[in-house]
Image (tube, rainbow, N blue to C red; front, side, top):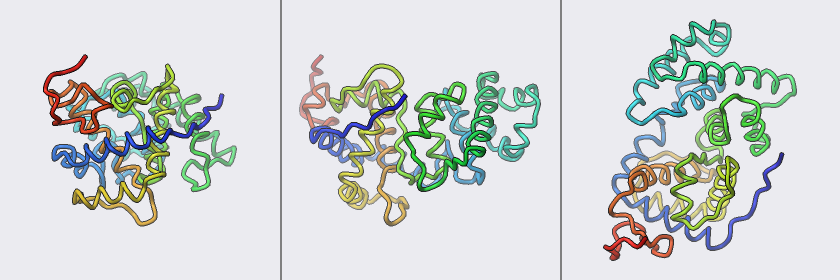
Length: 274
């Protein structure tokens, strides 16, 4: 199975850029982005082992925002044991570790199959953190071989393993079901929609990297982005927090005439159009 990258249309590029420009100017979105950009609460940089970061990405799945502190304690405890120590642990010990975040069998299964995949990659000479790695192939392989991973978990795992600014824009279910429609982006059905949406967003940032960086400066974001990299991580956070704050409801400020209405929030269309 291969998922061909399809170049976004000029209209898709304009719509994504306009939405990011609008969302980036919202004070509540900026607050959340600044709080999670340089050191993300879900995927912290303090975990030095890329294998633990990939584990954290999988274990963060199906956890609500109100449980982030509980999740942080669990994954910090896991990091203190080390990835090899976790692999050597018995299932009963692992179940006790992950019990506060629920779904122990699913999380143990994810960890066991992740360890098996990483061992296979090592034997095959595949380094998921290498700059030359084929990211699309890695995402597909990860989603196929790791139990319960899916494309969205695979995207997150490889992002965290490689670092925030590696060029991957993870796409969760809400970005597929809620963000894509307000952008007028048609996606295929099924899990492959996450990859198609990722490809579109990454291509848009690539096409307008300088313009997105200008938005960061114009809105005075207090974030650190290395020189020479595209601001994919910043765009991801702007979109993910816009989705959380304005689409998970949705907010009464959200115009129902999107994507035709380019203002999206706080426009002059007070009556929702269904």
